[in-house]
Image (tube, rainbow, N blue to C red; front, side, top):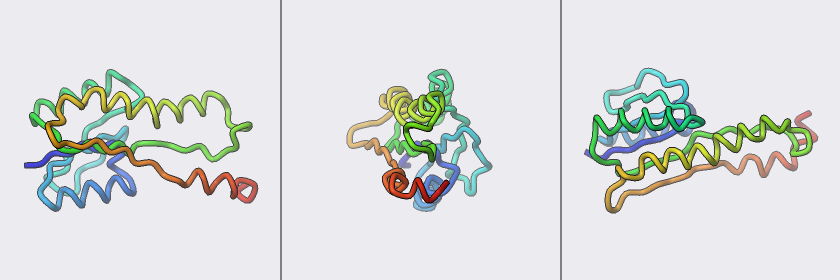
Length: 140
């Protein structure tokens, strides 16, 4: 059986990716800060706060107890603060960076040993923030 780990697997695109692969016989470990009951038996919810190295290590231990390999890691968890750079409070910017950048680093560092030959690591972001630069004045 092929195995996948996805962060941000509960909402929107993450949920759609999880369902797509689970319906094709993949075991999907869906890491999310607020995991939900799986929609089918191939989706395994894993409570994970990617801001915490300890939480990511705990998630890795859980996954490692259930499989000896991952074929794919998809880093999808992320946030975007809709504010201009000069107006966003520093603590909000640091939080966004910690989730979007450091979170992917923590996940990849912990789970990379489970990715075997031919495995893949995918980082998915959105270009929405590029559009928001031009829409910022209209959103306020």
